[in-house]
Length: 169
Length: 76
Image 1 (cartoon, each protein chain N blue to C red):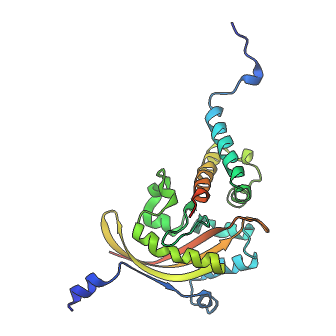
Image 2: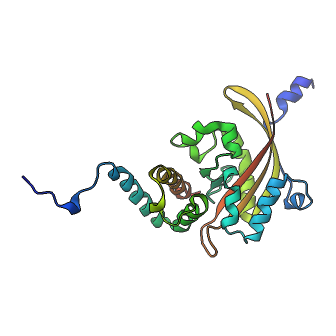
Image 3: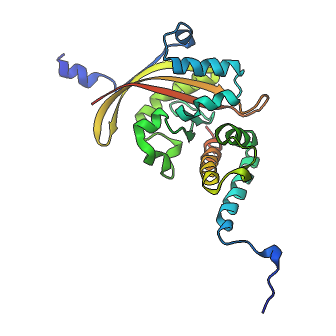
């Protein structure tokens, strides 16, 4: 097998579930650790502690299925998905519901399912994307927390905090 | 000439926004998403009532609510 074969055989993405222990042991970015700390302190309720983090979050529903992450309804001004896909993506008629890369969407779905089951998910991901027609490799940390809008509310939603570690062209 | 009753009068610029607001509020209530509406208003806009938002901010808020209704409408 040649180096080219290995490169071609390499999957377009890698997602690793690192578990919340990794955050507790100080291995995560401090911004993500602070978000988890605030979410825990609130008892999983979206209270005023969430306000600090809102610019960096995207919010989505709890409608997750096999290989299909929940649709997005809110994209913070400094959210990593906005950094990657741009302001135009957030403004186009339907795209607020889905990020534009179908393969990445499918690979990312499990994190949302785990967050809804356990309350939160923390992981590392590396993926290839096409941005502005050019292939890039993006590495990022992501923390997804399942929250309720108020104590006792039947509705839950997912708050996604992604931090891009590198973009290689 | 048909007399105009003041109760029927609405400023032309207020019509589309109010219609959108009413439509989305109804959809939110039908889907049991009133808690989400209140949460987004209070945390992201720091007001307790949509009427407290300036017109531009109200449109932004309704854009989010539009997506919210669609995001929770999908059955999986």
